[in-house]
Amino acid sequence: MKRAVIGILLCLLGSGAIVYAIMWPRQSTSVLSPITQSASWRIDRPLDKYTIDSLSRRGGIPGDIEFDEAVATTAAYTEYLFHFMSEGKKATGLAHIPKDASSQNKKPVIVQFRGYVDQRIYAPGVGTKRSAEVFAEQGFITLAPDFLGYGGSDNPSSDVFEERFQTYVVALDLLASVATMPMADSSRVGIWAHSNGGQIALTVLAITRGTYPTTLWAPVTRAFPYSILYYTDEADDKGKALRKKLAEFEQNYDTDLYTVVNFTDRIAAPLQLHQGSGDAAVPVKWSEEFVSELKDSNITIGYFLYPGADHNLQPSWNTVISRDIGFFTRHLVTEK
Image 1 (cartoon, rainbow, N blue to C red):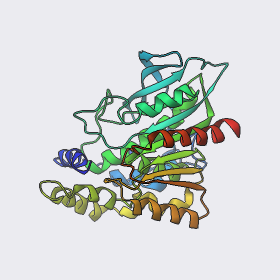
Image 2: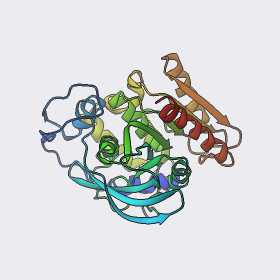
Image 3: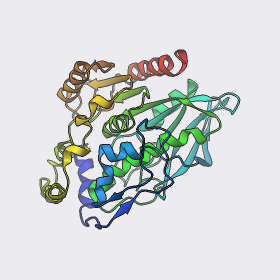
Image 4: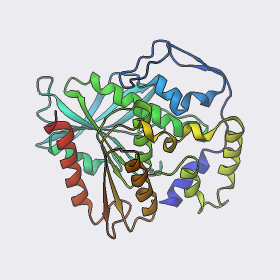
């Protein structure tokens, strides 16, 4: 997996960010964050708007989720390609809609954030489709964004760090857009996340202070920028190009303002974390230390370690998904 991560990091390093003043849209409103946001504010440095605090003031901006075409159907659900707008860019994804979902029979929603996938082999649903099918069979709507640069989405920023931060914006806006789906119950939304998607999910929880029940599969929980430097050790240049870009970033920005590990006190959602002892991509130590830190902060989190399981939780996948179904049923169905 490390070698796969390298490919996208290095191909994005060829050009830098264009430095200019940026203003968030004046009409922006948040349906997610309880933090009162300013109507607009001027950003002197372009990436300032991606700090945890800045994104908390922004929140999620809803856009209509539109279904493009049905690509598969079963007795239990229909699989659709969908798209919505985020910061003026089209973001696409894959949805699974239970057959009995309607405006009169609204269903709970699970938003899914995948881990890293090489763009050369990516297709909508890679990393999420198998679990989405199981959730849909159990009566949950699932939405898995492709993120910018993937699937039919518009291209992301040419700056490697801004591209990373744009995943948070897309995630925030998708969560805010759930309310535009007539068959979705926007009061019952959970998050499923794997690997780097776990880092995205945790960042979104800190930004919004939301209570979305969240299940994490082998999440990346180390602080930025170490969380990406760790995966460059097999690069041909041993990470030299990325370190150069990082040095430029740190001349202008404080990395502490961009990393979720400094804002875990803002996480209010119930969490469930699954980790395989045989995971070659995310060390067990990361998850165990993270779980310990959260418990010390009185954050509710269930932790499961699977002996010998790999980064995709094989061969324990069936057990993991069964626990997730129970988790989401408890928090999104039974308790509602």
